[in-house]
Amino acid sequence: MKLLYYLLFFCGSCMAQEVDIYFDFNKYDINMQAKQTLQLFTQSHKDALIVELRGYCDHVGSDAYNDTLAMKRIRAVQNALRELQFNVPDKTTIKSYGERFEQLPEQSANRKVSIVYKLPEKVAVKSELSEFRKSTLNAKVGDIIKLPGMNFFNNSAKMLPKSVPTLEELLCILEENPNLHIEIQGHICCQKERDVNDVSTARARAVFNYLIQKGINRKRLTYKGYGISKPIHKIPEKSELEEEENRRVEIRIVKI
Image 1 (cartoon, one colour):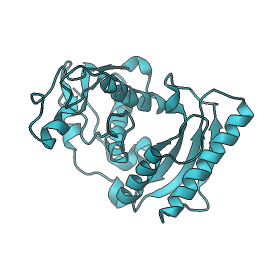
Image 2 (tube, rainbow, N blue to C red):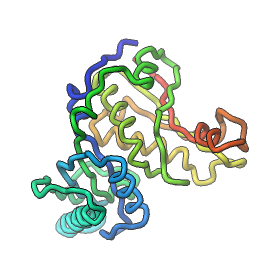
Image 3 (cartoon, one colour):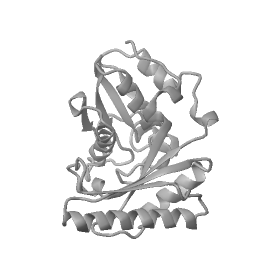
Image 4 (tube, rainbow, N blue to C red):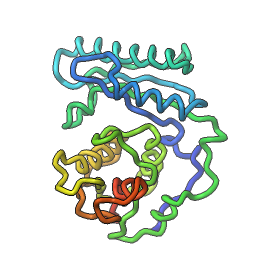
């Protein structure tokens, strides 16, 4: 499989990264999950430079109302970051999209603020192939590759900020290889019974939604939740490590 390798600063989509902060319906206050995401982001990205804040809403309500709501959400995130002693430059671009964007079917995924940031060049530049990229570079149709570092809030499809680098790398691979088609596969751990809340599908769909929002043609992507049907380790797991390895998202190479 011929996948292009490049230094990170040559890939435009990898120069700027994003983390999403989600809101409750018709609200602009920072809920507990959003607060946790912001705390994790500020702790793990101390050198990040915020360049843009983008506000979004679902389609309920008028254009004017949603424009105002999206702006209030941006201000709430801006204030929360400053309360966490994280620098938000005065020149940061602020954009309220309201409901004027390609809405995702899952409405909760549309109620958000995207923090667009850049890392210092010494952090952003990669000179060696990652293990994930090596695996993808050598992949054949039918091969299954784990997305390293993909983590979610407990029993949720909301991704932790530390998942972003892997998503950005997957995005860049897909952009550089327009013939590549994949199936995104979600798995869970710990439950002896079936995936009652279908969390595995929701997590696979979250990766799917991220990629199409970034411009990848949805015809190149499918997603499916496998629940506990394909564990790496027998359930119940014997350790937290086994739980973590069962709780994963993978891609299957469909076409190259």
